[in-house]
Image 1 (spheres, one colour):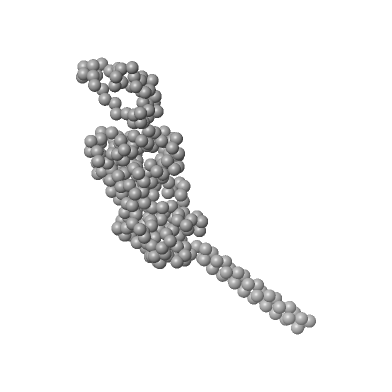
Image 2 (cartoon, one colour):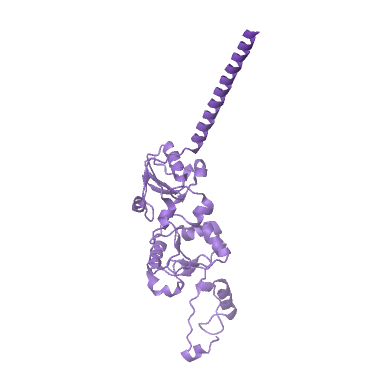
Length: 307
C-alpha cells in the first residue's frame, strides 16, 4: 500500500513536470512566433534626398527608376515625387512588368517616411528578382515635400476629381497657345505658355495659398516644371504638377473631355469681322478660358458698364 502511494505520487510529479515543460515550450514557441511576426529588418541600402535629387531628371535618364511603394489610391494619385511610377508593395508581384529589363538599373523605392516599411519590403523583393542596384529613400515623400522648392506631382484621376467636384483650383496649360492649347486642352485650364509667363502672371490667383496645378505635354515635357518653379519663386505655396500631362488626360478622360476652339468652327456675324451672337454665348458658356476678351470702348464708356 505504501509502495502504491509512492508510485502514484511519483507518477503525479512526473506528469506535473511533463505538463509544465510542455507549457513552457509552447509559451516559448508562441513568443518566438510573435517576435518573428513583429520583426522588421530595414533594407540594407538607404539613401538620402540629395541622392534622389541627383538622379531625378525630366525626362528620367535611362537606367534609373523612381518607384512609389504606397497605395495607388489615395496616396499616389494626389501627391507623389515627380517622375516616380506607382508600384504599390501590395501589388508588387503583379506589376513586375513595369520594372526595367536591365537588372543593373538603379531602382529607388520610397513610401511614407521613416515609419513606413513598404519601400523596404519592395526593395527586398526587387533584389530577390535579381536587381543589383536597389536603394531605399527611407525619409520618403514627407521629406521631399518638406522642401519649399519642391512640389508634388498628381495624376489624371485626381485632376478630374478636382474638376468634377468644383474644387477651387487654377489649372494652367504651359504649352504654346496656338500650336497646342487652342487645338485641345483640359477643361477649365487657362493658357500661360512658359515663354510668356512673366506677361501673364496677372492670371494667377491673388491668394498665394490657392491651389495651382501646371501641366504640359507629358513626362518628356519640361514646361510645366519650369513654370511651377517660377510660381514658387513668386511666393505661391500650393503648387502641383500634373507631370503626365495632356496625353494622360486624353487617355484617361477621353477626347470628349477636352476643350478646343478652332477659328474655322466659329460662325461669323452679319457684320464683317464679327462673331455670331449665339455663337459667342455658346463659347462663353462652354469654353470661356479659350477667349481673350478685349473691351475697345473709351474709358468713359467702360465705366458705365454693360456691353
